[in-house]
Image 1 (cartoon, one colour):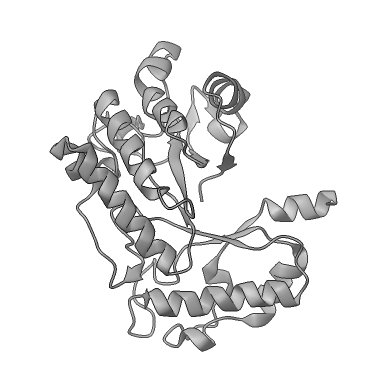
Image 2 (cartoon, one colour):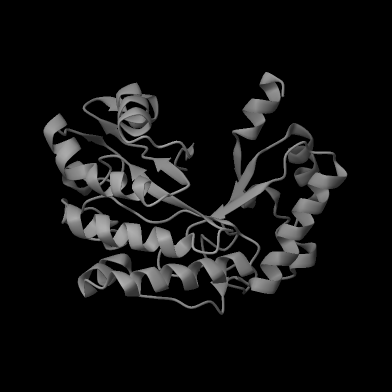
Length: 269
């Protein structure tokens, strides 16, 4: 592959960019010329739901059959345009397949953690993955493995709480459930230190000592790697003044070398 093709393969586009404004009918929802351009450029992945921001045309989402209709069209266009690598689609599936109408929904991860029942969390993962895959989507941006240390943070409910052990056990169970079919890739997130935001601001510079980082924030991610998680998502915050996405210390030394993570790493969006 050329450098241009490699750069395109690393590019992820929001499905919003290829919608024609009439999402009510999945057969007519796509701007086929936009998808074709992405295919020719070799764009590697697409994410999100066109309904993530709210209802569109009186509709709040697609069911599994409608999702498959849209994603099949995208795959077909990629094939027709001679794309060297198939497109990979991913969505958030935090407490069930929330973007798939008719799918099973569970309580938020913080509630699952309160059960202290890792077998239950494993089964949640199995069901969530099945419902997401039924929609034609094999990549799941879950679990959230941040440690809930800042009660003002708006995403506490997406975590497994403030205990690194509980987060490690529950996160590993969910990953094993999500990936149990062998056809779905889970994505641990958000690496690392994202949950310790000052004053609850969602995107800020977090001050964390190395001791805290290794002993408090890292264990749940290390457990996920050992559980076989296939992908990871970095955080869009800074840790001690350095953006995580630009940190060799965190993404190479800690994640790749110390934790021995060999899977795909994607940036947050």
